[in-house]
Length: 121
Image 1: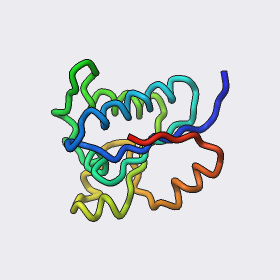
Image 2: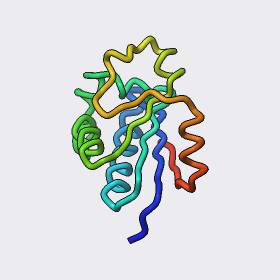
Image 3: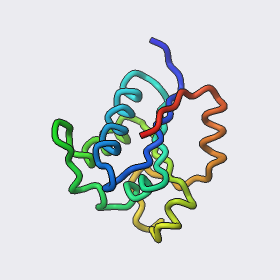
Image 4: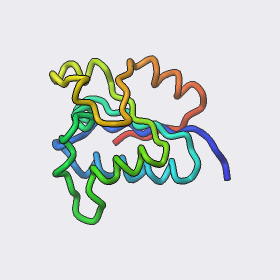
């Protein structure tokens, strides 16, 4: 099995719960296949990093989003949150979900230049 790097950029939250959910479904598949996997929460997706926000998101046909997010972190997945996106929305680092880290864009660029494949939702 090929082991590499995979980045999933999630730009949606309650504005498009389908995209937010599918992003984490794909991220879980990547981490389960042995990829070093990063989810980058940006634009509206930054809201998903706020404790309690994803609790009531459950797209038909999928596991609840909170469950998918917890599974991802438990499997060793990494969640990065766009710093300016998070601040712009008035969100507080005190309310960050477990397993999430606030980062600048340079961190993602560095990961991608190390040969990571990427997909955006």
